[in-house]
Amino acid sequence: MKSTGIIRRVDELGRVVIPIEIRNQFDIVEKDPIEIYVEGSSIILKKFEPNCIFCGSTKDLSSYNDKLICKDCAKKIGNLSSNKDK
Image: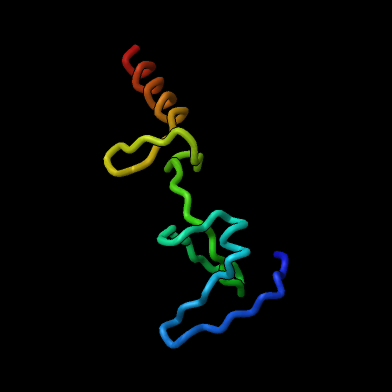
């Protein structure tokens, strides 16, 4: 993990401002969802990108029963149904 050399203070509501240079670098704009998770002793912030529940792909997603699935996985599932009928 590379240090930016930028230090920010946490305000009384627990908020931290992400510097504009970093927001621009990661194409983060107002109201974008940010994923927060812990890795060892580090707190990681990551721009949230919806992904396929099976393979993790972020391309060509469709919604099925409020779950996201990519075209490739949907095709594979369709093939499973066809093979089962034989």
